[in-house]
Amino acid sequence: MNRYIVFLFVVIFILLLAWNLIPFLFQQQKNMYLNEIEESPIVLIIESSTDLDSLSILMDDLNYIDHYVVERDSTISNLLIETYNLERAKNILAKYDLPDIIKIYLDFSQFGLDKYFQLEKLIKTGYPDVIYKYNTRKLLDFETRKNHLLNAFYLINGIVIIFVLLLLTFLRVHFESKQNNYWKIFRESGGHSTYRNRQYWLNSILLCVAPAGIIVGIYYLFQAHGIISGEINFYLFIAQFATLVLASILGRIFMGEKI
Image (tube, rainbow, N blue to C red; front, side, top):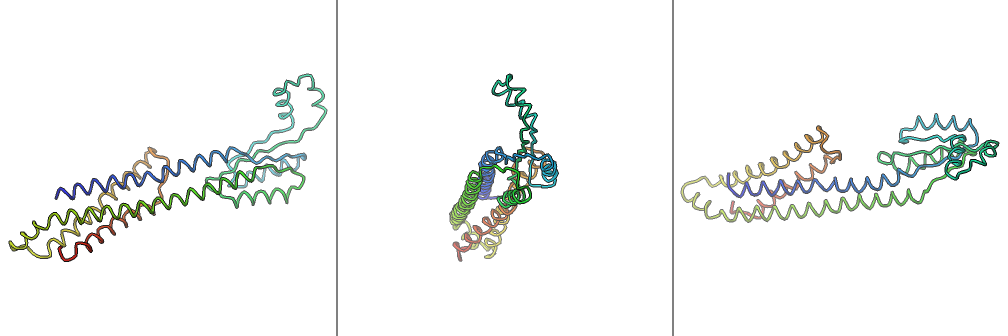
């Protein structure tokens, strides 16, 4: 195997390895946004025990709710007494029925704004006496930041595709051109004129399949053993392989009749 093929193999492997780190970096940033928004619950203030029981059943049936917490009036009374040192007012508080509270934590990693507004409409229309509190502006800001992050992800991947394509095309043409004298002597010595072209495509298959295959294999091996927790969309692997193939095709076109 030519030294330049080994060199290109190493370069391609490093490029693909770095390229596949991008989804994990973006997922990390997205998780920061998710943690921030998922820590802010929807708060329902409920006067009726019937509404409380009905809403509890409803929460259990909705798959976009991560979990919910019920704080009954007795719990709230005790919390007020402990927080504000209201031992003397304990008997007074006991005379009043404080409302119950449900804190709802949504799973925004799986569901979007549509589910939030669906839940909001469901509660406000089905339970008009329930007080509904949530910072909707914060949720809209989260959705905006998430969309900007997704656009940045696509933009960076587009830039990487162009960079990898140009770099690998240049390297293939450069190293192939350095071998022109060798192949000239090969032909003059009776070597078959089509051998170089065939060898070029065999090397291209090796450089496209081997590094990409190793990267995919490492990814799924790490996934199976729980070494990495993030996920890479398989379409990214397809885009990477297509970029390698296109670089080989462009290299062949630029070499023209020299091969």
